[in-house]
Image 1 (cartoon, rainbow, N blue to C red):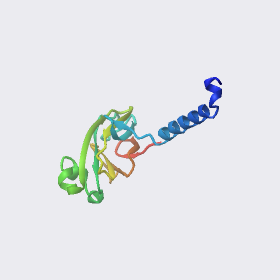
Image 2: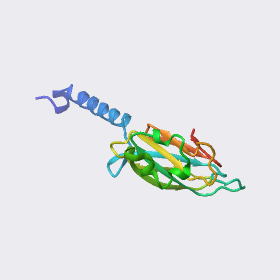
Image 3: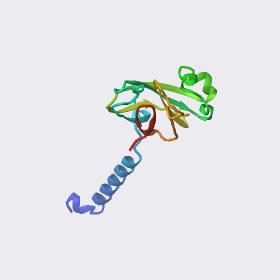
Length: 157
């Protein structure tokens, strides 16, 4: 009688190959989770003068991550019109909002539970002196990397 490892010489490599394939597939398609559910990941870098209101030092900034099915209602809107009126302004497209805070000169990652109906993620910064439309950022991705400067939020590097 053959020893177990020589009895079925093909079994061990095949099992090892299947295991390696399974591991590679799960690591390639890894979805961020919060409490076992899909997540939205926001990586923020706040410059030292972030949200400085035109002064020499930056200020902490509250931000919101809005989950919507359609962001078209945001066009032409001001920060004052949107903030605390998201459900009315965005109507049935509005699904969920989460708040966070970033301090000047800090780099931080935030994880928010994703609503399964979310098609668009909107980052909204409560800048004390917002300029133009750069107080918000719209993405179809669940992973967002942004930089906060004095007056705006921009895609990060």
